[in-house]
Image (cartoon, rainbow, N blue to C red; front, side, top):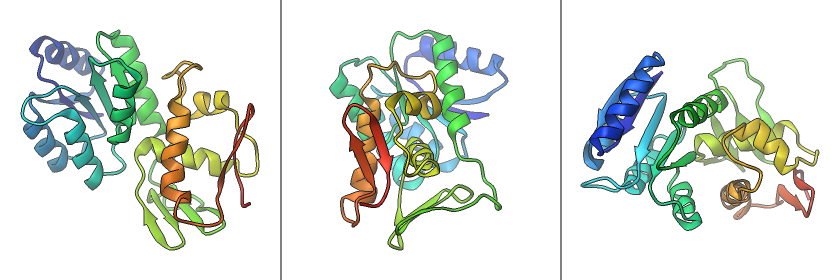
Length: 225
């Protein structure tokens, strides 16, 4: 894969560059926010690993600007801030996953594999998924509701695709963790609730009927009211 690493700590950048290169990835490194943003917007990357605390421009700002122009590229945010509110701010900015420093390199590799594995693969023959006036095209990665384009992050797209492929069926949080996040989060994390809320704001808030429903104690189901 072609990976963009945006990290200003020399030891961390060197460690990650060496480790990812040994895994046969092509790694580009930026050491500040403005350079990272320029490289992210100029190049076609399979994954961006983005530090949060960067000189010149914060990782959150870089993430927001990249996401505005490239809704599909997976973004893994590194942060020394481990509070729930800090992590949610990263997700709100458009990150698909986060990892708190210090971290184990093997865990980072597992998260990288999971993010790329869940990325929709281009396919001209992939069947378009429908529910009411919502459509999702796995090939072009396009989502529309009532004819209006909906911009989703890679993780949001994967979650919506999974729910649509099982529309009408109650999907538990464990199912979602195993099939969308795989091993990236423990079962006590509230990240699923956060992403369900993200999807609701984008595909349900301004439309009728509502399509994402919560069954307390059981999970979620996509269906027309």
